[in-house]
Image 1 (spheres, rainbow, N blue to C red):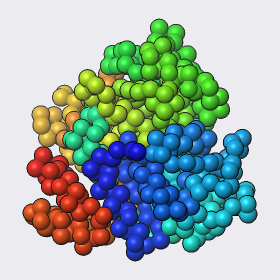
Image 2: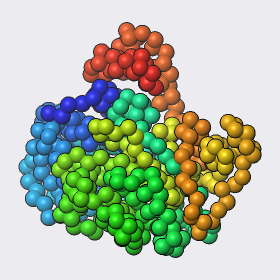
Image 3: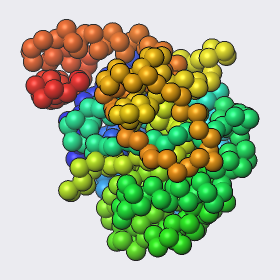
Image 4: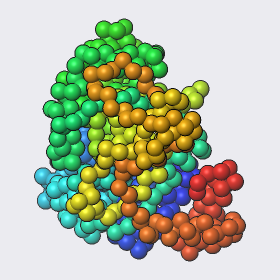
Length: 477
């Protein structure tokens, strides 16, 4: 049986309490916090009560990874996916969205539907499945419930329950700390947006050239030489060129994408774990739910991520940069090397993003603005661009203003205490704020136990002890 951390048990209690009053709940939990493990724990409970359970995945490799987690949880299960054996009599199924939506007439709707990467819920295939399972209890899983098109998730989930944020997970040792460096951002003048994000072909024209790629390799040598790293490219061609440049420089690297055969992905993950390669360059693969350790069949510590893909997607940004935060013995911090301007545009891993189920007004759908942070030319501190000079050394700021061709400059380390991105439009969830206010008002452990009981938590004493110990250790809870 899977052993849960106290914060995971508390979040599961919150979800179960919410399901007593609602048919559908979105469980927002940070990247690397163990969402699949928590989902497996809840699926196991439903299975033991003879409930039919269906876990929904959008990619084939996620089916394999979820199956491995369900096996560890002791959950007998079958599959609804192309090329995989399906036993319709099994009470638990792990299903591919693309396959299930074509076979809805062959299955009875489940009692519990768990939807991975739930920010995809408004998509047509997901929506069709959810209407088919309208009578089921529904749990959505997402680290970043934010859609580029501004569509809210409140049409698919009645309420949202949030777990500890990344800052707390770092402070408590569940995630590694990090150091972030940012170069002069690429000149994206003339790059258009399509479906809310930058046009890939136009980004490739700017970033996929020998000079820029050479600068990426040079900065890896300077800041992360020898470390295991993931680099995120703009396109398949760009990612392949990055891998070739690293290899030519004597740094073993490979490219992977969604078309890379499963056996090659697994072999590359093992090579990264064992030191046969140092870098995996990818596009549209090592983001949502991708677990290198599961692919390798052994622990894999990603010590550095290289962002060479400009994006306006907060979800993609969070998924990319948090890959370096997985803790490992002897690891003091992960590295984030941003060659795309994403940190200035969208924020650092432990920024306090205010997630909400509500959609954004049409005029506010862009996730980015061109203002946000300035880098001091003297002390390299990062500070809000609204300030006329550096608040620490007093040097009057100058704009970053260099073009993407000027690539010889140094990456500069971001001062996380000073950094306050102005780029993300945020909304406040009144329900979440009220729950946080109630929690702050509970001063003693007895008050917390009473609050937990009023919310219907299954283990109020355990939840109260978790919150109280976090307060004593300086956590945010």
